[in-house]
Amino acid sequence: MSFAIRGDIMGDFEHVFSLNKTQVGWISGAAFWGFGLSILFGGPLCDAFGIGRLLKLAAVGHIAGVLLSIFAQDFTALFTATLLIGTANGLIEASINPLIATLYKGDKTARLIALHAWFPGGIVIGGVLSYAFTHLGLGWQAKMLLMLVPALTYAALFFGKQFPATERQAAGVPFSHMFRELAKPLFIAIFLCMWLTAATELGPGQWVSNIFNDVMHSSSKVGVLVLVWINGIMYLLRQFGGRIAHRIPPPLLIAVTSVFAAIGLWLFGRATTPTDAFAAAALLAIGVAFWWPTMLGITAERFPRGGALALAVIGAAGSISTALAGPVMGWINDTYGASRVLPIWAFLPVVICAAFLLIHLLDRARGGYRIEHLHERV
Image (tube, rainbow, N blue to C red; front, side, top):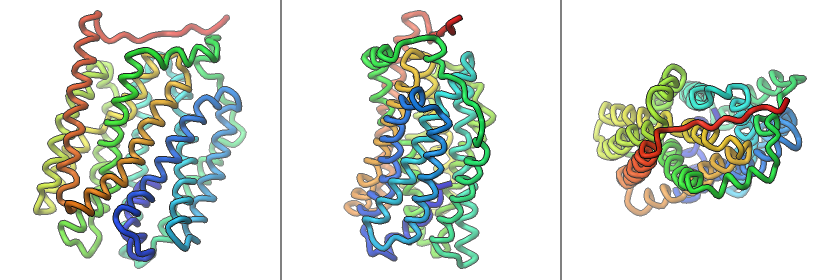
């Protein structure tokens, strides 16, 4: 929900606080700086402090970040508030991914895809509510208050619950062995690819609303519905299509879908009518729908000894990449115009396709995609 609401109110920030597009990009990217850094440090802390404590800390961060946003007076306060919300988001991500990998040891990728259905699902909810609030005449502060509802809800849901030891802990793998996994060539390749997949998947999400409104000259702010459309498709594919990970090797899945992402980005930038824009957005959604959870699934299945640390490093790479994508896309917008942003960005999924096709071919040469298993100590 925070992703959708933030995307919808970026225009308000620009006008109310007299910001340029690059500054807006820094604010949108701040959430992913906090997201990335808290995933990176929060993942290993799952073992030391427990998942439950991290979730409580996340709830505090969400509530404080929302309130600071509402009372912000300048760019610095907005940046700080968004950073705080992103940090809380990251603590949840750092906790939940190892939890799913532990609970569903034989079905990690499909379950992670289903779990992450509610990232786009939340965007749909937040986007529809933001659009409704706009037409009810309610301001950006009211939209920010919406985020307190899920924050308070998950705090209540997790209160008093007991959480299991992580898969690595249960198998008795020493803490130091997690770091050895990070030096493996395949892990390094996945780490580098995550920078590209995250920038392609999440970078445009912060801009499609503004780009649509600017190019189509939409006075009714219909652009947020493009974001809802994209994420509605992503939700359906993740919620009901996760089993595709059992039929297609995950690297090949990413390679094939990256073609759709490249075409979608290119066509969205060339769209001259709302119909063209929504059609291109659908291709983009199909292209990127499985990427983030599949990257986590590959990590959990191929490097289980890396535990929460390996998942944290991959998640952090994606988050920091998205943080950098914000100002870069803002600079492209300021320098070349809104219609040029996404066609330029279409180069990234072309590289992604080549990289994962190579990984798939190397796997086939070695007998196919292999899932590594750990066994619990008796």
